[in-house]
Amino acid sequence: MVRLLEVGLIGAVCVAVLAFGGTAASFFALTQVIVIGLGILFVLSGQFSKVTSMRIPIASPLLLLAFVLLQVCPLPVSLAPLFGIATDDLVGESHFTVSMARYQTVSHLLLLVTYLTAFFLTLVLCRDRNAKRRLVIVFVSLGVFEALYGLIQYLTGWQQIFTYVKKYYLEEATGTYVNRNHFAGFLEMILPFAAVLALRCAGLLFRNTLRGTATLRKIASRTELPSLVFWLFLATLLFVALVLSRSRMGIISALVSLVAILALAGTASMPARTRAAVAALFFLGVLGLIVWIGSDPVMSRFETLGQEYNFSGQNRISIWRDTLGLIRHHPLLGTGLGSFSVVYPSVQTVFLTHLVEHAHCDYLEVASELGLPGAILVFGSIFSVLAQTGRQYRKAEESFDRAVSLGCIGSIVAILVHSLADFNLYIPANALAFTVILALAESNGHPAEAPERVESRLSAANKTIKSLMAASCCLVFLQLAAP
Image 1 (spheres, rainbow, N blue to C red):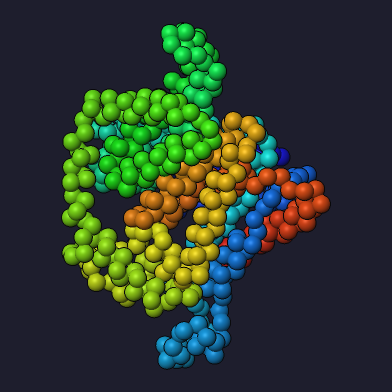
Image 2: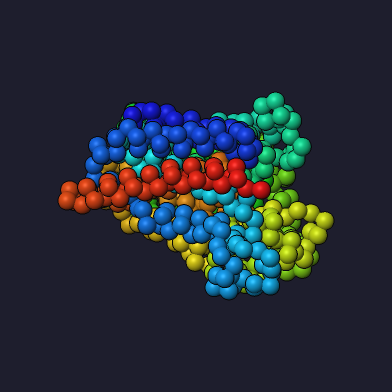
């Protein structure tokens, strides 16, 4: 059963990433069917009782599901004042919903169920160390494929996604994504894993070596040297492809995550010279490739940074200002998950001839759709996983587990930084990949529980997954019944 879950989950992520980053609803529907089907099959198989000592967070997912379900449930008009909605706007109506775009909220709630199901299935897989190792390797392999695809696009001018001819971003690397920023968002989640595996190989390589020429001879003869070169090459390839996407926040986010990785590796007693050697080799490789390819197009993007981030004119800051107005109008329950593009015109002051689909800041968009309590719940849970993983990764007994924890920290940091000026968490493939990485971090961030607590944990987790399955069925019905 675990092998079926592993193959299915990996297949679902690959389909989402390769099919335009999951932005094509018809393709991502296949991913949803796979993930939710695996969840149903797992619960019905009775295999859950065989998973021991698994700590599963259930409070936050259930609260989030309940919160969004409240947004789409029909409520009596008499309750409207309790939710800050004027009854004058509901004249002639017997019911109302908190969500101002019910169809979009139901659709995004189905996405949320998919992500949460993938989160729990990943936790199950992570009980098998070999399955966890294979999952990480497949993620890195998928990232390398995307990087190579993007490099081919950039270097040859063959701007296609398989048979689809691109219409936008014709001078940048985008891989199988339509948008360069979302391509960069995926690569910045994968890059930390290649980097920490290179650090791990370097730590093994330089362990117990002597100083002087004897050290060089000994290092050259160690079997870890080819592995170090391999992982450094992959990390360099990923970063160069990210740079050639010309995504400014993608580049900045990746650099921040790499700095965080190097700093945390030092707290785990990795010698400074080892970290310095790996960093030097990595950036020398990156510099060499960028100089060979050419850096002028990338530098020109940063030259316009001041023009696009100022407090006058039409830019992201103007959209953020309007979004803050939405948050002020709906601070507690928001406007409904996924409703931003429908509700934003009510406060829109810029790009008046365009449809603004996202706030270009995940924090503000989530706060506008779920309200401040919902945003605190979502991002508080993410920061909690990050903090717990940071506290526990040094205690891992196996070096690969420590490397995976450190890679998860780098990936989460990268997305959290990138989310300040983009909407990667609203791109289905990136959101799904991020969810799986969160589950990897969660599995490494908590030690095994005492046996007496396992049974109650399993029972609660079983009920949670059954609730997710029931919610998904209800959502499909609501989606079909929506006008």
